[in-house]
Image 1 (cartoon, rainbow, N blue to C red):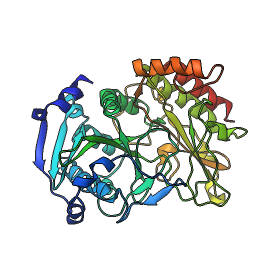
Image 2: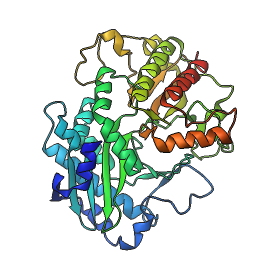
Image 3: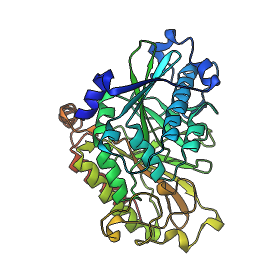
Image 4: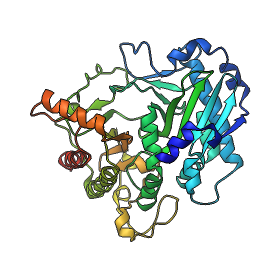
Length: 402
């Protein structure tokens, strides 16, 4: 945390370069001075929720064009200077600032994230093409109560979310241990973070956003989506009308009466939840969510092969862990995109991932816990100690799986 604080406060730590960018992105980055107040907060969330293409005329169009231009150039740096080994301490602290026409984009811990993307088998060319100016971003109007803005790449493979400065600071402080955890447990349910960036328009305030693999990918046949925290206060979303095209992420109370049928995969999921929530507890983190989606399997997708557990052959790239293979809780991954977040049961495919890993249980959250204890006596809410939060979410998964 201290390393990031120094870097963010001192331009002497940054590499200032004039970044090359695609012509389409350059044109979109102009005429931005009147839009500073619109960078990250939506003025009109509309009556419906879901995915909307951010095309010309959308109030966030110029902003997302700047993001695309900046990310294209930032990824080009990692392509021109490929990683040859695991990230060093300096890699976790590096800040690269690229100056464009009308804005600047910062890349935080860029070499560390480039190595992480490589360890996942993600080609930088594909990453650049999905996040660059090749197609418009999609705006995701979330049921979350946070003031963050949410976007998807045009192919819906990558998820972008704005973050507060203190959340970014926490993420980067924990990044070395996060990378180490993924090395030890390559099939972890933790969301795969792929980048952390800052963006400043003209002389405006610096804002931050993260990029991660979307848990809900590919989304074409998904029928239900849930955000689970293992509590009840503010955990209900009014469902969309039947046959509505609206994309809604439902919550804990919407899941009442339902179960997750995993068959032989259940023991793997329960163990992995224990491993991942124990790690988050050690980081003093809470308020994360288990994202979950349902997709009915086609007849030719069912079979014993998708339910096998294995502990001897690694199925994702990365540095081998010195731990015994049995402690890594590996499994046979389905032959599908985004396989790390997919778990097949006998009848359904489940998309699963732990997201929102940046809320630390500090003084602010301790005071919030006290206030909610007085306001909601006898009810369960999200702001509790990290140990209780982890235990409660694991208990929820155990109670709702078979």
